Length: 330
Image 1 (cartoon, rainbow, N blue to C red):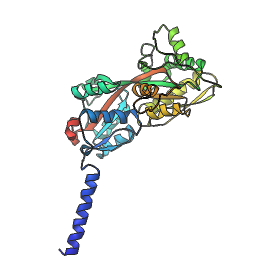
Image 2 (image 1 turned 45 degrees about the vertical axis):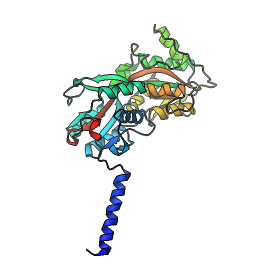
Image 3 (image 1 turned 90 degrees about the vertical axis):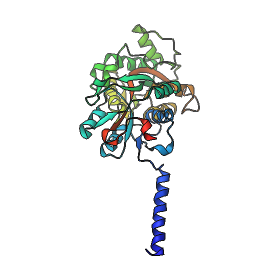
């Protein structure tokens, strides 16, 4: 080999080494959800719980739908999703790939997550999916509806909450069954409640002692925007059906659902008066109104309208990848 060729080979080898160093030298590709989403936040909390370092994995900020395609193609090893149970997107992935498995969180990781977030321990029963052979330990939160107190009047807040409960049977999505009076206040916790929603729930005999939000609605708009999530998740299709229910049962309004980056984007859009309604995990909503976490200052114009469904952190991989735990990424 000539000196010139040898130097060229060394140069190429050095470039490869730099490339591997830049991406951490890891073959573990993990989809953590879009930037600004609750999935992104919980994924990073899971990494912290397992004391993983950046060189242990490569992250892909994709919604669960796109990430599932990557898992199927073998380009993504682990995909984290906050989804309803069961999730049709996971069932579809199993139908295509045939060897999907779900990763459990360790007791230590769950304790860490509970100490540092609003998520709480949950067990996914083995009969939730055909491919599960045993229960899966994970964490869960609640999907809730937040309303803009600058654009949602008391009467409209009342009608929105009422339709969510009394017309949820018109929703074909499986998670529509979770919108019941028994579940109506799940996720309320420390959030201010919209006065219209508060009036409806009080009429139904529900009790709570939360702060009732003050309204600043100068002129109730007829055209309203509902922020959902990515097309591959639960928010987007469910939010579309919720908008249809409201449009069919509340006179004088037209709600349009839109695809977004989910919780954080929806809450920020409400704050900036660019959105009227937003679906969110209850943890980020609490952060928003308190001005903590991803929010530098309190979001003063956001209020709880109702519970939508329990949000379950579901972590999928494939048998062929040989990953049983996040410990395997080290």
